[in-house]
Length: 144
Image (cartoon, rainbow, N blue to C red; front, side, top):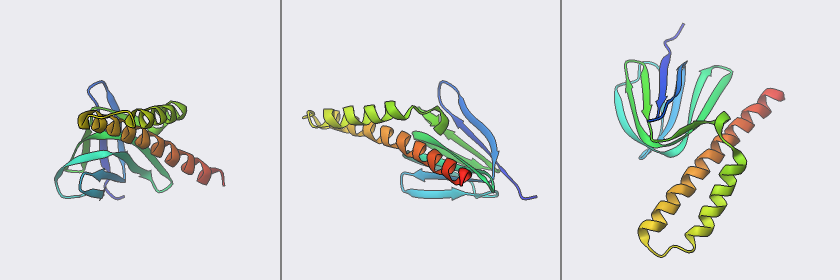
């Protein structure tokens, strides 16, 4: 049997995930990358986006990760982020409301810093919605 990776997603409040996986796909600040067993050591900054991992050939899971860092070393992938949510934890309606509210607020902002902070909030809402969409797509494939 092929090697597996130990994936840990950790925030200041909790350990979001600790699971053996076959593959991890994440968006770093300089592009998407895929981590397989025996990957070279790596330390990279993550973008606000969805992280995906392959549990086995039939099961893929996702989480919205709000930036952070990812370290790969000796078949261990550790993600440290201020905020991360498994797709099953995300309230889709609340994410839509947050995105709509922030988009409306953005039009009112005059200060560049305020605009940037609002754009970061929109990006977080979009990452949550993207994770929910991945979950919905997986469910659709299972039921077909």
